[in-house]
Length: 205
Image (cartoon, rainbow, N blue to C red; front, top):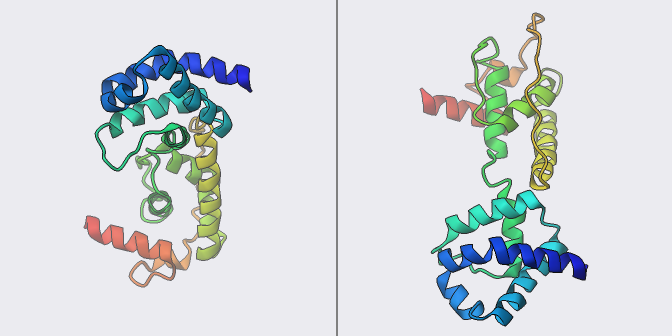
């Protein structure tokens, strides 16, 4: 571990220190004012990154988030905070579970025959490809649980640095399965996700 920490410390000296100096000058002036302090402080940052399992991709995403948070009084910069920032940075721009659910319901409901429909995020598109058809076989509660499980799984994989797979070519579905009751009757939705879909549809009207 010591060798790994030393390697990461060297990387932080080259790539994190300039960011700290430019975006966090008070922190840099207090903690990085001479070579000895620089090595000690960045060594602590490196150690937390190694312990927390921060990936290379997560590190660079964390750097970008660090720049965006500069000047925010609520963010206190320290080794643990930076490591956590790196781990969550890759999922910072993901749509919420509710947004994903809403778009899948839209695509499988009122937009199911619209060949031009576009998802707002690739994660919504992927989950729809993998689990969206289950809306025709499961109850509303079962479907909600299935989508949540898939969403949580991909969020973890993205946080670990995994890329979303490209869209697959799909043949047109000519079977046209019947819609479940909670999509047929959006005026009186029977579950939370259908209520969400109805509310957002009314909001767009």
